[in-house]
Length: 325
Length: 190
Image (cartoon, rainbow over all chains, first blue to last red; front, top):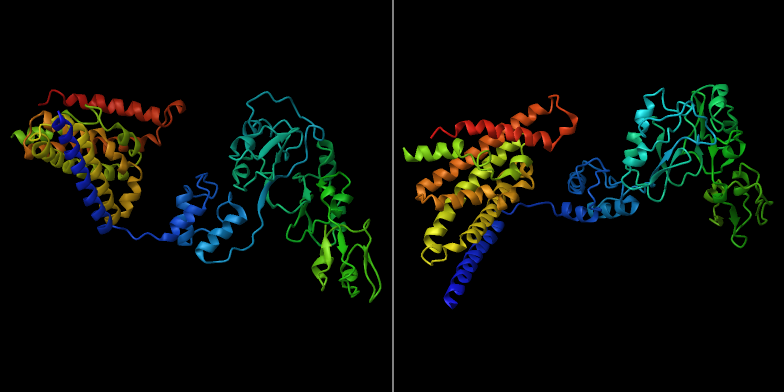
């Protein structure tokens, strides 16, 4: 009885140990020297294999990063934090690239834009696009049928009142919506840039007014109002150069059609720390809105109602005593 | 003469994939490209030939003398698993391209029923060592033949018109069944 049990256990156990030894020896003998960095980078990556980076998965990206084919900030999900970690492993410094988010360049929601016809087809922007460019009167605007919503792997985009809106918190800049949008109205924008021109319509002013209340009519008021040369006017349409924009929101103030959107509640104001201020008048000279007063050798003051929060004074202040709040 | 019959029988008449329906997983999984299919076929050939011999030896030298032949299945799985691990290491060292092409399917040979099937069939048919080796190699060649043929058909399918609803595995399974019917034509041969 005991033999019946013992023999199989001893035999199979013995076989297993034998194979174990052979394999252990083989793993030494046939060991492939892999770059330990690949493993480290792979460990740092999120491991969701979402493919947002354009590689087959996190393993493939880790490989590409170590080989130098991909940048350390190639993972759109991990953001700056991850880029820093990966850069550390790779022994380089990551450029402090700002997090990008997708933004839908259209303000033509159900209240602002008219409908051309009643669309009853498949609820998909690409399908609607084939029927005279969708039901929205403006042929440049968001169709609002949510093709981008369905491709978003992060639940970061939703159709609100007929126009797709991106949730900045959830957006990882994976560009899937940008590829999916048949109107090509989704763009990647640095997250800190608060001002947005919400129109893609390149028609002349009159034609724009006919189809949408918030379309860009090409009055160029914003171009004249901008103190930083950040607005360009081309093809009957205003565009912001985000590398020059300072978030002063003046363009949004002057825009007669409210095409330019800015959240004024987020507008910052300059505050001068009077104890530190030496009265050098540099901030006063820098300010393009005459929002700072004060004579030489005297403490300067910010006129709050004139300050637009562009932050140029804070950059120029030699004592670094101006804070943007 | 008997050896030739065993070889031909294993390749065509009793083809493991298309007549015995063993090893369907890699057959469907790695058959998208002829190149990888061939690689998989060669890996299986290597493993099957080795596994046939090893399991036969284990059976005759260990299991039968100790009168524990009833542990056959477990012992064989152990042998095959160990062998596959070994083969994986060798391939990783000698041919990274093949290693990458085979991907997850190489470890899958571990639990490939075709490999286990050939080992058990060898014992059941009372083959001697040489016959066992021939049967193993023949079975694996049959597997390679089937998977390469299938991959060739699937490559052509890519550019052929067929109902959209059948896209992917449905059309692959239909193709496999047609191929299987074709192989039944060999059944009266030997």
